[in-house]
Image 1 (cartoon, rainbow, N blue to C red):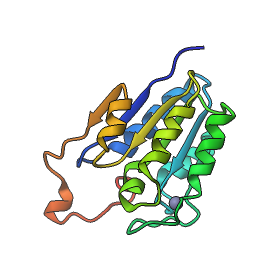
Image 2 (cartoon, helix red, strand yellow; image 1 turned 45 degrees about the vertical axis):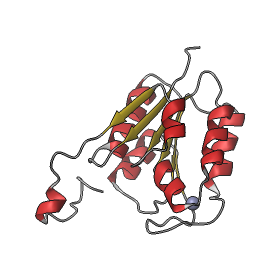
Image 3 (cartoon, rainbow, N blue to C red; image 1 turned 120 degrees about the vertical axis):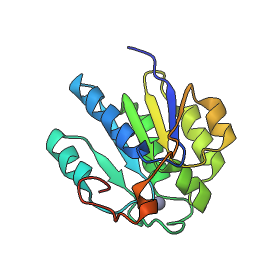
Image 4 (cartoon, protein in one colour; image 1 turned 90 degrees about the horizontal axis):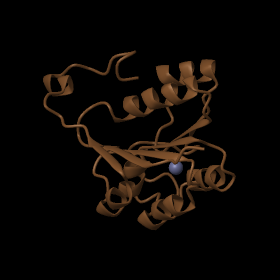
Length: 164
Ligand SMILES: [Zn+2]
Protein backbone atom coordinates (compact mmCIF):
# COMPACT_ATOMS: atom_id res chain seq x y z
CA UNK A 1 0.00 0.00 0.00
CA UNK A 2 1.30 3.45 -0.82
CA UNK A 3 2.18 5.83 1.99
CA UNK A 4 -0.20 8.70 2.72
CA UNK A 5 0.76 12.33 3.29
CA UNK A 6 -0.82 15.28 5.09
CA UNK A 7 -1.97 18.19 2.94
CA UNK A 8 -3.33 21.65 3.75
CA UNK A 9 -5.18 23.99 1.39
CA UNK A 10 -5.34 27.40 3.01
CA UNK A 11 -5.28 31.11 2.12
CA UNK A 12 -7.88 33.79 1.40
CA UNK A 13 -8.47 32.92 -2.26
CA UNK A 14 -11.27 30.83 -3.71
CA UNK A 15 -10.68 27.17 -4.48
CA UNK A 16 -9.75 25.29 -1.33
CA UNK A 17 -12.82 23.06 -1.09
CA UNK A 18 -13.10 22.69 -4.84
CA UNK A 19 -9.46 21.54 -5.00
CA UNK A 20 -10.15 19.00 -2.26
CA UNK A 21 -13.18 17.64 -4.13
CA UNK A 22 -11.11 17.48 -7.32
CA UNK A 23 -8.62 15.25 -5.53
CA UNK A 24 -11.48 13.09 -4.24
CA UNK A 25 -12.71 12.44 -7.75
CA UNK A 26 -9.19 11.57 -8.90
CA UNK A 27 -8.74 9.08 -6.05
CA UNK A 28 -12.21 7.58 -6.63
CA UNK A 29 -11.25 7.03 -10.25
CA UNK A 30 -8.53 4.68 -9.06
CA UNK A 31 -10.90 2.83 -6.75
CA UNK A 32 -9.54 4.36 -3.54
CA UNK A 33 -11.74 4.70 -0.49
CA UNK A 34 -12.55 8.37 0.02
CA UNK A 35 -14.37 10.18 2.83
CA UNK A 36 -15.23 13.87 3.19
CA UNK A 37 -16.05 15.40 6.57
CA UNK A 38 -17.30 18.99 6.36
CA UNK A 39 -17.17 21.20 9.40
CA UNK A 40 -19.53 24.19 9.78
CA UNK A 41 -21.39 23.43 6.56
CA UNK A 42 -24.97 22.30 6.27
CA UNK A 43 -25.90 23.43 2.77
CA UNK A 44 -26.47 20.95 -0.01
CA UNK A 45 -24.42 22.17 -2.99
CA UNK A 46 -23.82 20.87 -6.49
CA UNK A 47 -20.85 18.81 -5.35
CA UNK A 48 -23.08 16.92 -2.90
CA UNK A 49 -25.46 15.92 -5.68
CA UNK A 50 -22.54 14.58 -7.70
CA UNK A 51 -20.92 12.97 -4.66
CA UNK A 52 -24.05 10.88 -4.14
CA UNK A 53 -24.04 9.84 -7.79
CA UNK A 54 -20.46 8.59 -7.63
CA UNK A 55 -20.72 7.07 -4.16
CA UNK A 56 -18.55 9.57 -2.32
CA UNK A 57 -19.67 9.77 1.33
CA UNK A 58 -19.80 13.36 2.59
CA UNK A 59 -20.62 13.89 6.27
CA UNK A 60 -21.68 17.36 7.36
CA UNK A 61 -21.94 18.68 10.87
CA UNK A 62 -25.45 17.91 12.19
CA UNK A 63 -25.35 21.35 13.80
CA UNK A 64 -23.50 23.03 10.97
CA UNK A 65 -23.49 26.77 10.64
CA UNK A 66 -20.92 29.21 9.41
CA UNK A 67 -21.06 32.02 11.92
CA UNK A 68 -20.02 30.35 15.14
CA UNK A 69 -19.17 27.12 16.95
CA UNK A 70 -21.65 24.25 16.51
CA UNK A 71 -21.05 22.36 19.73
CA UNK A 72 -17.96 21.75 21.82
CA UNK A 73 -16.60 19.36 20.85
CA UNK A 74 -17.99 19.13 17.33
CA UNK A 75 -19.53 15.64 16.89
CA UNK A 76 -17.62 15.31 13.61
CA UNK A 77 -14.40 14.81 15.58
CA UNK A 78 -15.74 11.44 16.76
CA UNK A 79 -16.61 10.56 13.16
CA UNK A 80 -13.11 11.48 11.94
CA UNK A 81 -11.58 9.44 14.77
CA UNK A 82 -13.69 6.45 13.79
CA UNK A 83 -12.64 6.66 10.13
CA UNK A 84 -8.97 6.80 11.13
CA UNK A 85 -9.11 4.13 13.86
CA UNK A 86 -10.93 1.74 11.54
CA UNK A 87 -8.56 2.60 8.69
CA UNK A 88 -11.68 3.19 6.60
CA UNK A 89 -10.32 5.69 4.07
CA UNK A 90 -7.35 6.04 1.74
CA UNK A 91 -8.17 9.75 1.42
CA UNK A 92 -9.86 11.71 4.20
CA UNK A 93 -10.81 15.34 3.62
CA UNK A 94 -11.42 17.48 6.71
CA UNK A 95 -13.07 20.43 4.99
CA UNK A 96 -13.08 23.77 6.87
CA UNK A 97 -11.25 22.22 9.80
CA UNK A 98 -9.32 25.51 10.17
CA UNK A 99 -12.59 27.44 10.51
CA UNK A 100 -13.83 24.96 13.11
CA UNK A 101 -10.62 25.54 15.08
CA UNK A 102 -11.05 29.33 14.78
CA UNK A 103 -14.65 29.12 15.98
CA UNK A 104 -13.64 26.90 18.89
CA UNK A 105 -15.76 23.81 18.14
CA UNK A 106 -12.57 21.85 17.41
CA UNK A 107 -9.47 22.38 19.53
CA UNK A 108 -5.99 22.41 18.10
CA UNK A 109 -5.19 19.41 20.30
CA UNK A 110 -8.10 17.46 18.81
CA UNK A 111 -6.85 18.27 15.31
CA UNK A 112 -3.30 17.22 16.20
CA UNK A 113 -4.51 13.98 17.76
CA UNK A 114 -6.37 13.13 14.54
CA UNK A 115 -3.02 13.39 12.74
CA UNK A 116 -1.49 11.12 15.37
CA UNK A 117 -4.17 8.49 14.63
CA UNK A 118 -3.56 8.58 10.86
CA UNK A 119 -2.84 5.12 9.42
CA UNK A 120 0.24 5.15 7.22
CA UNK A 121 -1.78 4.56 4.05
CA UNK A 122 -4.28 7.38 4.68
CA UNK A 123 -3.87 10.73 2.97
CA UNK A 124 -5.39 13.60 4.96
CA UNK A 125 -6.40 16.91 3.36
CA UNK A 126 -7.37 19.79 5.68
CA UNK A 127 -8.82 23.00 4.32
CA UNK A 128 -9.62 26.48 5.59
CA UNK A 129 -8.18 29.95 6.00
CA UNK A 130 -5.44 30.72 8.47
CA UNK A 131 -4.05 27.26 9.11
CA UNK A 132 -2.44 27.15 12.57
CA UNK A 133 1.36 26.93 12.53
CA UNK A 134 1.27 23.62 14.46
CA UNK A 135 -0.75 21.97 11.68
CA UNK A 136 1.41 23.50 8.94
CA UNK A 137 4.42 21.95 10.68
CA UNK A 138 2.80 18.51 10.54
CA UNK A 139 1.84 18.72 6.86
CA UNK A 140 4.09 17.73 3.98
CA UNK A 141 2.14 19.78 1.42
CA UNK A 142 0.73 23.24 2.10
CA UNK A 143 -0.87 25.22 -0.70
CA UNK A 144 -2.05 28.75 -0.04
CA UNK A 145 -4.73 30.03 -2.41
CA UNK A 146 -3.80 33.66 -2.83
CA UNK A 147 -6.63 36.08 -3.54
CA UNK A 148 -5.37 38.20 -6.42
CA UNK A 149 -8.92 39.23 -7.31
CA UNK A 150 -12.33 38.05 -6.24
CA UNK A 151 -15.53 39.03 -7.99
CA UNK A 152 -17.30 39.18 -4.59
CA UNK A 153 -15.37 42.43 -4.03
CA UNK A 154 -17.00 43.83 -7.17
CA UNK A 155 -20.45 42.88 -5.86
CA UNK A 156 -20.98 39.71 -7.90
CA UNK A 157 -23.41 37.52 -5.89
CA UNK A 158 -22.85 33.85 -5.14
CA UNK A 159 -23.91 31.91 -8.23
CA UNK A 160 -25.36 28.41 -8.57
CA UNK A 161 -22.78 26.04 -10.01
CA UNK A 162 -19.89 28.36 -9.16
CA UNK A 163 -20.07 29.02 -5.41
CA UNK A 164 -22.52 26.28 -4.49
ZN1 LIG B 1 -19.78 20.73 14.18
